[in-house]
Amino acid sequence: MRLVVLGGGGFRVPLIHQALLADEGPGRVTDLALYDVAPARLRTIGRVLDDAARRAGVPGPRVQLETDLETALHGADFVFSAIRVGGLTGRVCDERSALEQGVLGQETTGAGGVCYGLRTVPEAIRIAETVRRVAPESRVINFTNPAGMVTEAMSRVLGDRVVGICDSPVGMFRRVARALGVEVEQAEFDYAGLNHLGWLRRVLVGGEDVLPRLLADRALLRGIEEGRLFGPDWLASLGVIPNEYLWYWYYRGDAVEAAQRARHTRGELLIEQQRAFWADAEDGPGTDAEPGAALAAWERAREAREATYMADSRARAGAGDRDQNDLEGGGYDRIALQLMHAVASDEPVTLVLNVPNRHTLAGLDTDAVVEVPCIVDGNGWRPYAADPLTGHAQGLVTTVKEVDRLTIEAALSGSTALATKALALHPLVGSVTVARRILESQLQEVPGLRAVLTR
Image (tube, rainbow, N blue to C red; front, side):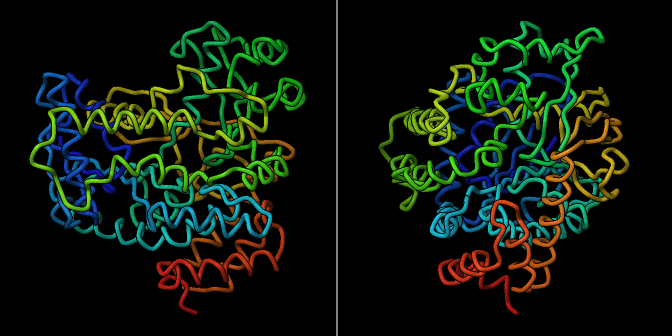
């Protein structure tokens, strides 16, 4: 089986490769093509993968480094899309341009998500059209953020042959299961919403909902990341466990203050953390590098990355350091592997995915991409029936979906007016004046956005 990774020079690609090295089952990936527009980064990641294969003592899949998209896609069975249009410097601009106006600039939520989406959607559509032409039988797994928005844009070209994945829900499920003393495989998780905007509503074990037991126990709640982040009292009031990204909504003022007080934005911190790792990428591989040096450097940088995830938010909430179980990284790599196996072998598995709504959640049309549990098998992926969202959750999801679609239309039409409207209507921006100022700053600082918004 041939897997093509778009954004193959990305920092987290070795996690995918590690999952492939551990896979000895039938139908495993035998050929791995890494595509990227940055040759030096590709070479660096290639060295990390070589080191990993040597340490594992297995050859793993054959690795091809490629800078031509069509060449990479030929013969693909699956395409994993994890691109970052504008790189980390673009992310920093998303963060800073919003914070300067007193609103949140997180890369998938609020103004940052809209600006990132404006840059990314046109490239995602170009990729989808190339896949349809060059590898029409392949299936695309999208991890590019904002994942729900980008998946919905790509589905306009690829239909049901594209699906979005995220590791946030499964991470939450593992933490909740540990707190309740049950195996993840023994439980059924009722989760629904949009990417980074979802809620765990029930945890069924043997037909019994055991989530109320967790919500009623302050000590148990304090033992999981969500309990420390949101606070036991707030979770008990909600009666559900929110996705961790909802901290930016429920504690908006705290989130903005924490980000403004932080020495670095998340994008700036990642650039600093990864500086040493990428240091030799500009000149290509050295001739006297120690065996295993690339992998060791990557692992040090990865551990620092995982340990500082949402650090300013956790500090503001008094949540403390991340649990050791959450520092292993990845999650999305295992989800992707499970998905590919289920499709290739026709062995059903249940996964939380970003898929067209069809008739799953009331109040959204059939093409709206939602994040819900799905059955995955040889026929692809299909969402399970779900109870409606209620109250504020329904309102947030409906509003954010409208913003997603305005962003897609702005990116595809080149309309600055629609881009301004998308920003202004986002509840975490909520101001036409602020939206205009953010967009003006973006257009001055980000050449890639000026190429998108042409009118």
